[in-house]
Length: 471
Image (cartoon, rainbow, N blue to C red):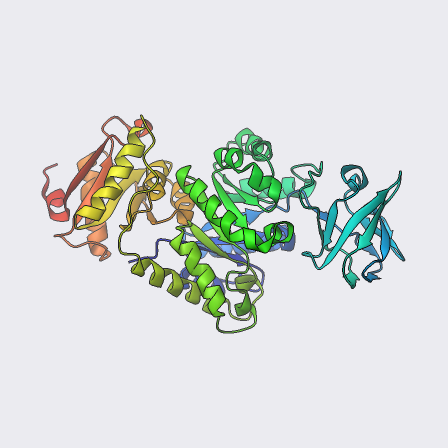
């Protein structure tokens, strides 16, 4: 049986070739991620073409950079020692020199106060604002090191009034729409209004792209309920999150966000350094294996590989290893009980909950649905059953976007003229693909009142009975 937990792999020019992509897909990749921070539009077009030539089921996700602050590109590095005092000023064109550090956000000085902590380059350099005048922030260095150009700047628990969508983000969002990509993962989402800004652009252009909100700071965690409600999914981006929040708190936050997303019927991706040592080594550490296993036990929709598949020396081995870990943990989990409880007064939610529960008490081999948008399949996924959901989709968008959904395997099919014709075609297909036998029990979710009204019934039968039913 296919793994239920999906794999997202970050692709660069190095691994975006047809040969690499084919091997990655064969190893278990379900979604390809393009990182706009390290990808030109020209190379992205070539990678997208290669992906779609290999397999139409692979979904494509593109990151935006989001509202970020970096040290200036101009000037020289600053070598600092504990106790030094340096001055910081916001000016993207400023030249860093001597004891003056320039950052790319012009209003950096205005948004910070005495006592705020500033972290540079993934927290390698820490400093505290001790004084502020009309021009500069005066900061005391907390540890020795080198402050280099173009490095990330984090300010824990401070709301910076940066534009939600940068000019570069707009270019990549338009690019995603034009190339009919499947997901936009927006960086540094802090509030549901950030999601609405992207949604407005997509709606204006009638785009079906789904929005994944990357949670990367404490403000995003604090506003998570509204963000989940506004988004199609969440990415727990543990890299930046771990810079701003104490390391011991990250596992608790991860568990909380996974539970909240499952309850809200939204996708959740766990990202950053899952098999980080495999960038340079052919085998992971035991701690990394346990990290992947934890996310599988917690039933995240997907796990993401970053440098492991983008720039690492062992991209195929990394995917193979993650696939092995996922399958081993899923195999060890014998019973999956529907959780959370169904939504009151929601027919589809109640039917989906009942279907997953039935699979724990009857010898059922598959749940079969047809779908126009993927909604029914996502409801079934929300209850995290052990039995695979086979979703037969009437458009490629729905099929690809289900590539990120837990426990769902999606296929394309032409619209059926009748329910019985649909069942006969799907059962024959699944038997031919050796996913079912004639004697297997299946659950069928369907509707009697048109696609727009969604599922209205659940049926349990053997595959043979569904084949024999008269047209």
